[in-house]
Amino acid sequence: MQLNTQSRTESGSWRLVGVRWWHSPARLVLFFILPAFLLLAFATPGIIENAPVLASHKVYVTPEYIIQAISLLITLALSSFIFDKVPSTNKVVINNGALSFLFWATALAYLIWFGPMVATRPDIVIGILLGSSGAVYESRDVAQHIPGVTSVTQFGIAYTIIYATKVYQDREALPRRYKLMMYAIFAMAIFRAIVASERISLIEIAVPYFAVFTSSYRPRYNLQSTGIKFFPYILYAVAPVFFALFEYPRSWVNYYVNIYDTFSHFILDRFSLYYATSLNNICSALTNLPSPNFRGDWTLTWLYRLPILGDIISPGDVDYRAGTWPQGFLEQYGDPQYNNPTGILIAVFDWGLAPSYIVMIVYGAFLGISYASFKKGAGAARYVYPIFLYSIFELLRVGYIFDARAFSGILGILIALLFWGRSRPLSAE
Image (tube, rainbow, N blue to C red):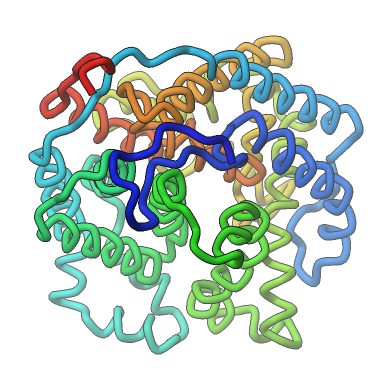
């Protein structure tokens, strides 16, 4: 753990004690993501070829693509290391009014999205909770994504980060209603994860919250200290259990119960396939599709999925809200169920190998600058860092930071900073 400024009080276990090793983007990439990628690259052929289901028609992972991915990860780590030296000169805080705005915007968006289904078809929700076959897919038909409204639900991420920063880093004594709102944000995310089968909606809130929490918590017991120290490894170790909770009503009861001998075999196989096919899918695209296409199919997804503007500027032959893959590609080379591309190589597909290093340098610069602000407990960039940190954890599976989910969360923070943020010199602290 790297020590930082302590809080004014010496009592209790809540202090701004600093950052853990995995808070550092450079260390997280080099000591966790890179080894995990090497393990994944080694295991992918066996995972795909031995799967009881046809997840990919062929293994496209080659030494060339592996070397490219390694070099891009190292570039990302070096860039973030260089830019995390940028100093923060001002203390930027956000007034409580931002929390009220973000909460009610999030709650209203959830109400518009899921309210009609809960009011008119409660049997669907009950069916999902009871594990009824087909209930999850029926909920998707009834409560479909609404452009703009769905994006605003991501303001819950902004609320979570700002709330956690005020409570744990700045040690503000907030009115009790904001804690209740935080509970409600988690409750809405859990509901969405279950009913809409979006596990990520809960994880993308929980991980940023935990990142801020652990920057200001001094463990009282060795077990707590060990858990925090090895958080990245524990996160991936328990991920299959979390995965299983949501795959049972989504996939097991609807189809795979007739294919796999046991539920545990299904979960381990499906979980590993999500990561193996993510790597294989992008390698397949680099092999079988014209690339680079210089459209930013994956790195500009956040832009193409914007309401109104996205419809105007996006290429006409791709519906980016429905999915980025060309029509029929996954049916021919993979499986539409496994439709993710690893976030490490998507820039190579979009822009070519040499420009992809520039993308990683810019990505690393944002990581480094926001991390410098976060570990200092000052500056505006500290509020967006937990989102960038979470994006590193997702690199093996998707390019989260390039997606509309991350953009909407960052947008909520930018709105909060614009209307409720205030800055003062650090010397005034």
